[in-house]
Image 1 (cartoon, rainbow, N blue to C red):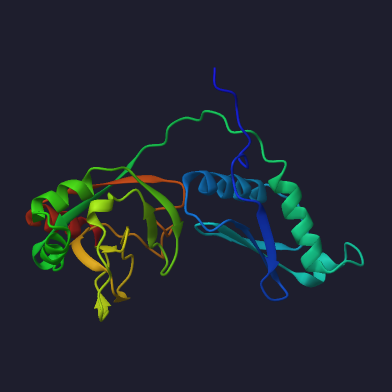
Image 2: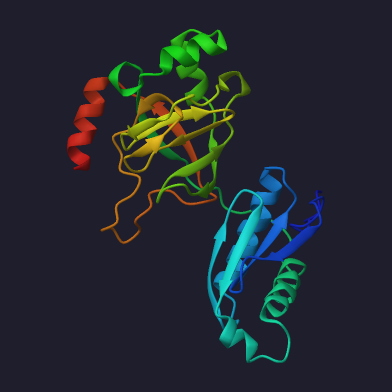
Length: 247
């Protein structure tokens, strides 16, 4: 029987460094991996239940977790530098994370996407670059379950892991001044979904009618780090129908 393992097993040594006078960054190497992601998620869960005076918020990324704090409140804990106090606390949390155990599988979020045409103007370019037929690009893009590593760039924008290497395509040499919300793009070995209308240089292969960010909602972001999703190809008629119901 496989024994439970510590979330920090086989990970690079943790480094903690200051980010100004009111934040510290914990870094676990510089390689994107699910093991690193799980550890950062577990550390974030511990922070959610922490009772550390002065803690304001934390921001997870691919290999880092940034903790923001109130230096005045933290300084009341003693004569130490607040950065040092928070760093020591984070090291303690990291090395006392509970061992990993089997958990209930979470439902996979399905993201409907209309590929190509006016909704995916760069599909043909990606097909040409990869040497694949457009239909094969779509098949490969909809095949995996993607892991949401983090939300960034714009509110609700998911950075995903799991795209097949065959689809890797460089970003555009000249970014578009405005990319429509819902656009699904490829940049290098990554794929993602534009949550808001923004400038962007990713190769656009499709668009989803779903709103990934609704500031008026109780949970503004449709996705969050740690979730898994799958893209589902839909027709233009289905896209228009779903878009009407998303308004």
